[in-house]
Image 1 (tube, rainbow, N blue to C red):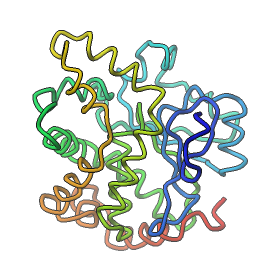
Image 2 (cartoon, helix red, strand yellow; image 1 turned 120 degrees about the vertical axis):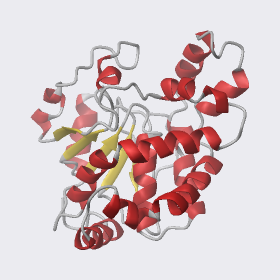
Image 3 (cartoon, rainbow, N blue to C red; image 1 turned 180 degrees about the vertical axis):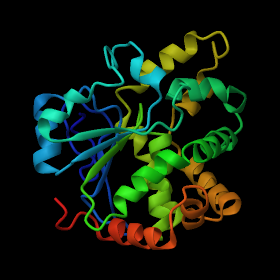
Amino acid sequence: MDTSLPSPPFIDIPGIHNFRGVGGHYVGPGLVFRSADPTKATKSGLEKMRQDLGIRVIYDLRSAPEIKRDGPEWAGVAVDKADVFEPYGIKREWVPVFAAKDYGPEQVALRYKEYTRSGTEGFVQAYRDILHAGSSAYATIFRHLAEKTPAPCLVHCTAGKDRTGVLVALLFMLAGAPADDIAKEYALTDLGLAPLKPLFIERLLKNPALEGNTEGVNNMVSSKAENMLATVEMINQEFGGAETYMMKNCGLSEDEVKRLRKSITEGALNNM
């Protein structure tokens, strides 16, 4: 990891990009962590996750095509490759937002390429789709966090940017964080993904649909605060806010939502 990254919230876990704790003034520390794909964590990285951070569960939001893809940063990863984590006492839960649809950063850019020069609209549409498709996956994570003493967990997708970012935004919203703070936390992903962004950009610019559109491609692989500000507004207007989304779309009870809010605002405490 780039040692120039601010710590907190970033944590140096060898082999994992964009790894940081989810916490702050509104959300308690040590319970939820977020990252890009963690399956390339080194032995020391895995030991640090388990021993220093107390992580017991990893929630993988990726689709099967993303997990199976081949490339310099994902080579040889398999859907059922749980043995990477099991020897360290960490359980991997596959909870895909889109089970069969590739939703990595590059594919999001291609799917919403018509919005590459139109501000936040493309991101809001992408995140609206994630909210609809991801309710079951998110419900599993929310229910874990609503347990009496939930174990610290890591949530990730391919880059730890979009599907992960929407879930984290919902947690911050439930905790009562202002939109500006949620957007600032989201924007940190630009720092965490800096080493991977050239790969994303290079591949996108080779695609005939986006060839030469450097400005648009850079916009789509970014994590600008205004994109999350617009998304928070959309969640409030179209889904009735985080609490209503969790009950209506994810099927949580009022009591589960109350326990979830208590867990995330208090943080890990003695749960490790």
